[in-house]
Image (cartoon, rainbow, N blue to C red):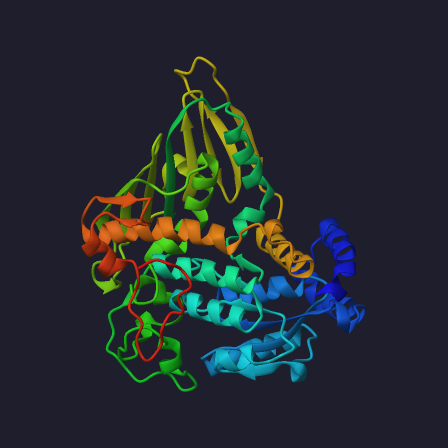
Length: 447
């Protein structure tokens, strides 16, 4: 979009000074929007606007020059609520086109970029179709619901040369970057173990209830998309899709892609050589879930081990935190989470190091959106804080952990072939089968 390049500098300076807060959003959005020439606007469409899709849309609209052209959701009830909320922000909803089918939104020629905030099992297909339609994409995490989906998404971005940002917004938070810089400085000494944990006391699955007809206004067939046809059940719907293998991968892919991501960045790690996972439905055996509510996974790398530890229904995680990443070195242990980072001295270390808590001071989601829109304007893919390649890398590692757990085996990964050494595991788990006439476009060379 060459005509928009002149707008990059002014936008970046404005957003660097202060991001528009939610409390000021309604009053300032209209004046900012009206001060920008139509030729400098980025028209966006939002696909899936119930959870993070809605959070992303609000963050996007804080960026000067972003204009909402269309929204799409398979639940008319969600659309009705969100349109009222947009109107309350002084946005003229009469100019926003409304869809129940994302393919019609992608056909809208004036849309430059789309948000994908659907359940996980839709991410790959919609992102690939959006790239084919010439749209840039902000896709929620985890980017793919299988290892093959991750590869197909990377290949599609490369084929169509679109700007694609994965929604791992922690990559835009300064304190995470500062923590990783400290890890890379070598001051911790030899790091043999990186530990990642996620204890989410507030999360729980829903009760087991009978199947029923979908609520009025819900296009359930469209919601299922490529997933297996099953009767509607409200305990599998909306937020709770994430506890079922058809649609997602539990805490491992829901929070894991955020937290494992920084462990991999800190250790400059590619893919593990072996993986094993142990856990089960220990917290809520009587509630409706398939994914484990308790899981411990061990990833073996060439020079260190990575441990994933997750539990629902418990907040008391390692180091008194309900989530975090710990880099355990000979001289000290660096701990980082969404609230900040610190270094705890190693008592046995010869070169002891410590650092008091540095608190988080910024809004990662807002900054992530500024970064995406800047890249949409500049076309500089290398400026993205979380490219589809980065998102696919950590999603692949998370999927490996789930596959090890589901198979009940210690799995070995062959980096030469890009597959597990056990072909039966590859056949069963690398790609989730598509149903209902859908197929995954494949640009990668994986068999």
